[in-house]
Amino acid sequence: MKPLIQKSVVALVLGTALISLGGCFPLLLGGAVTGGVLVASDRRTNGTVLEDNTIQLKSGNRLDDNIGQRAHINVNSYNRQVLLTGEVPSEQDKQLAEKVVAGVENVRNVVNELAVMGNSTLTQRSSDALVTSRVKGNLVDARDLFANAFKVTTERGTVYLMGRVSQREANRATEVVTITPGVQRLVRVLEIISEDELARMLPPADAKK
Image (cartoon, rainbow, N blue to C red; front, side, top):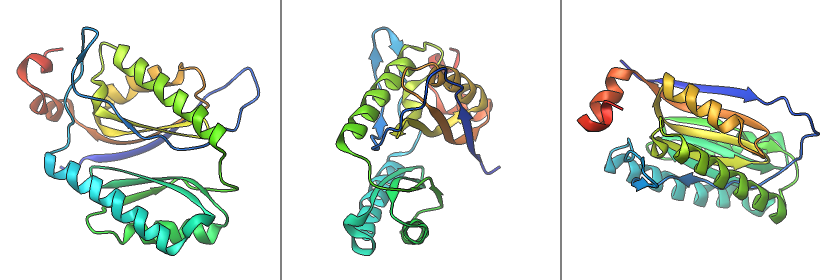
């Protein structure tokens, strides 16, 4: 059965005014035992990881050729599903960016989250880097999650989660991310797998956790 690609938005109700932040800082958490917390290895095959890296490189080059410096576009690929974030000056550029990336070899899906607005500032991007760091720490601290199953990207206060996870893991990660300071909104761009498939991926000792 083909895994379900889930794109969902979790909005936060905040007691203070929303701050518009910018910049995309992709982060892939490392596979190791950190502070006594077990972190699973990447759930993609080595070949898929290489494909994702190639997709990101080729997409960036083609976007530079077609759109250039008038836009700020970030490309993240996970299991050949591509997430576009950042800012473009027009709706035409937004659609062009999606078309360009969709034409890259091995891309199976494009999630276009580009905003039609002016480019974010370095200050805004630094703020997003801090949010990403906080999310990473909270995912690692959550002992019932395998942090490396998630790829984290932050853009203008919106956190994007990519990865191959079970529905249970997706729901738990939502709880963790939405209480992280600085997170204004959560968008889950996740490939949902069954608990049985997850168990087959993990070493026996890990599957029991």
